Amino acid sequence: MMSDSQRFPHDHSSRLVDVSNLSVNYGQTTALEGASFHLCPREFVAIIGPNGAGKSTLLKAMLGLVAFRGTVQFAQNLQPKPTEQIAYVPQARALDWAFPLTVWDVVMMARVRQIGWLRRASQVDREIVIHALERADLMDLRTRSIHDLSGGQRQRALLARMMAREAKLLFLDEPFHGVDTPTQNRILELLEAERQAGKGILMVTHDLEAARNWCSHILLVNQTVIASGKPEKVYTPENIARTFSRGAS
Ligand code: ADP
View 1: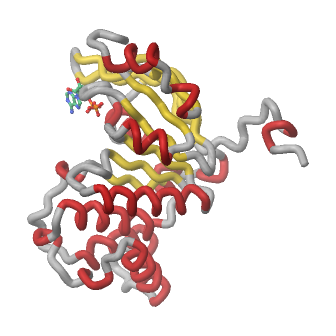
View 2: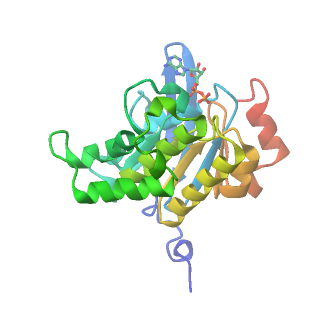
C-alpha cells in the first residue's frame, strides 16, 4: 500500500501548521530571524538550542503571544480560532504556584474554555479531568494545594491540564525542568501516547539524549532554524556545533 506521502508528494494539506520566515524582535534584540518549519499530526518535535536561542519565543509567536513578521499558517480544520486548538504548557518556573488552587482546580481550568465561565462543569468535563489525573498518577493528590507539590508533581499537574484540553496541538516549554528520571520517562510515555493518538507536539528541551530516543523529529534553533528532520539526520557534529557555538547563527 502506498503511504500518504507517496500518493500526495506535494500535498501540504496534512500539515497542522506551517511556519515561514518567522522573525521576532524585542526592541533592539533580535530573538528570531527567518525561521521556517512545519508540523504534521503524529510528529513529536524537540526544539533544541542554547539559552537565549529563541526557543520560547518561537512557541509564543505561534501562539500569538508576541508580535512577529512572516507567516504562521494553521490547517483548515483548526480554523477559525487555531490558537484555541493548542494546549500550551509554559515553563513551570514562570508560573505562580502560591496561588490558592488545588490540583483538581488546575486541571479543571483546562475545561473552562469549553464550559464557559458561568456554567457548571458537566459530568463529561469531570470525567475528562479524572481521566487526565489518572494518566498523570495524580488522583490521590487531587485535593492538594499546588503550593505543596514537588517539582515533578507540578509538571505532572501541568501535563494533566494539557491532556484535559483535548487539543490537537501540544506545545511544551521545558517539561523536564525540576523532575527526576522516572518522572521524565513517565512524561515522555504520556507524550508518546498523545503522538500516537494523532497530536502534533512541539517540546522545548535541553535533553538531547531524551530527544534522540523519544522524538520523531528535532528542530535545532539558534536565532533561526539551523536544521530540522529526523534525529539521525539532524544530529551531525556540524549542526550541533552551529547550534551551540557562540555567534553560530
Ligand atoms: P530561549 O527560550 O531559547 O532561552 P527566548 O526565546 O526566551 O530564548 O529568548 C530569546 C532572546 O530574546 C533572548 O536574547 C532573550 O533575552 C530575549 N527576550 C525574550 N523575551 C524577552 C522580552 N519579553 N523582552 C525582551 N527581550 C526578551
